Amino acid sequence: MDAQQEQAPIGQGCRSSLRASAELPEKNMLIIIVDYDANQNYVKRDLELFTKVVCSLTLLGKAHLLGSSENDLVIWSCSSNAVNPIYPEKLIDPEKENDSQLEELPIVEDLTRLRLFNLISQEIARLKCQATEETEQTVTTLLPGAVGVVLSYLNRCRREIAKVANIRGRILIVSGSKEPSVPLATMQMNVFHAAAKMGVTIDVCALELESSYMLRHAADITGGYYYSTSNFDALSTFLLGLFLPSPHVRQHLNYPVQPQADLRAMCFCHNKFVELGFVCTSCLAGG
Image (tube, rainbow, N blue to C red):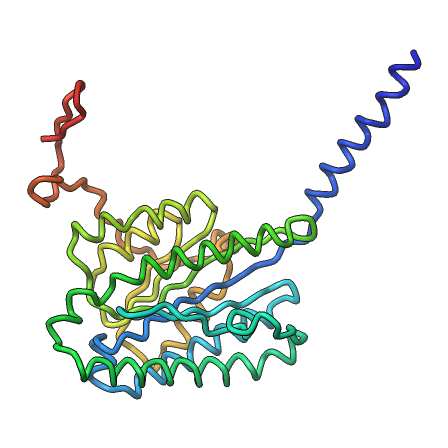
């Protein structure tokens, strides 16, 4: 009898701890990855269009922060040469103290514009010193790498505040870079499967890209939304309408139907899509 009385508080303690963990506040983190590569078609045609993209993204970021006090915003950038943190300042200066959410609003726009314009200026200067053929081959190779860096950052943030809050993260990729070869794209899919395993949704805003095998599959694998546009004047409207609502809110909204991604497998030997394949049961070789 005494043993049963002693075990009761233990059971109550377990239930109360589970209830406490379930009642932890939930933070919604929006992570934006901006492709600032100077080889993008719209950048080469008119650099002013990149200014419109940056302004539209800062508007989306500020709208996300204003949505709730539990919302966080992180901005990273990538090109064919580097992956760089943009916002918040703590990513660059670890000793920087975070300001209140309202104080951060003007900093988002000023800091994002300054750093992205500096980066694309350096990128243009770098490309002038290199042959165009050389850069065309590596134009999107760091985009999956940027996603990997962002997932590592998100995982670290989750560990640091695991006892205080739960973080629900999502990624928005904004890119107009040319599509890598399909064999290379298929080799880079692991990072998107890792995002799906972490429960991270990847949305894609493709700028002047008719079709992107890698990015379309990234959105399809993680349950995100893929949108392609060449209308830069209405970009702010598209970003706010499509990507401001979080994934669990979108199921209650009437979203445009997007085309199904091509899910056919690719032959490892011939690098061609196949609808019907044969696999050896002994060595698992495909044919």
